[in-house]
Length: 261
Image (cartoon, rainbow, N blue to C red; front, top):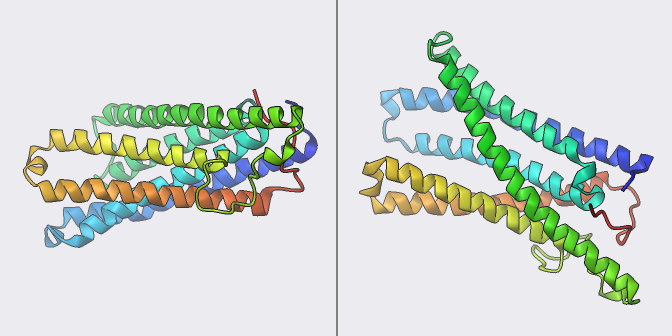
């Protein structure tokens, strides 16, 4: 599908929105919140303090907000242009992810007074965690593309048989969740992916950290926290999609030509 000038301008705005949001949130987390967190956990005065947990989950929340915003922009971009015309978004996400983990490593080096002799291990960690996030993105994109392509095929079929009234209205959102809306279904799918991977990561950490397994209450709270964070991710994506529709969309027909591969 070839894009006209209006769609290219809209895509450029989406790219800019994604780049600014990711850069701003990751910089805030890396240069402000993370150093404060490291300082607190290094101070024996705060040992066992609730402040440690607050800062830990604030870091997690900021990271997930950034990812949720990026996923929402992918959902909207794929809906409007198809993934084949939105590859720049993947590049922005990959660059932002490398920036996030590189910034964390650099802040660590500064706190420790210089580049350590094990700097190569830190670089490998940056690449390792970046690849994991990109693999998660690949899974999300596969699911979103499938859901949105199914929607456009249904639209084509309804038009073909003359039943336009059966085509579900995408914007504006009338409910917090609508199973007939491919964007909201995609949003729910992204939230579930985030939750499942977070729970799997938490379970691995618990297995490696034996003392946590001996505290069932602590484990339950940790898993419930991940559920809450996933719910927050859904709300962030919902709001970001509304923002895309309200601020970035310019006179697009709600039942325009399908954006399929």
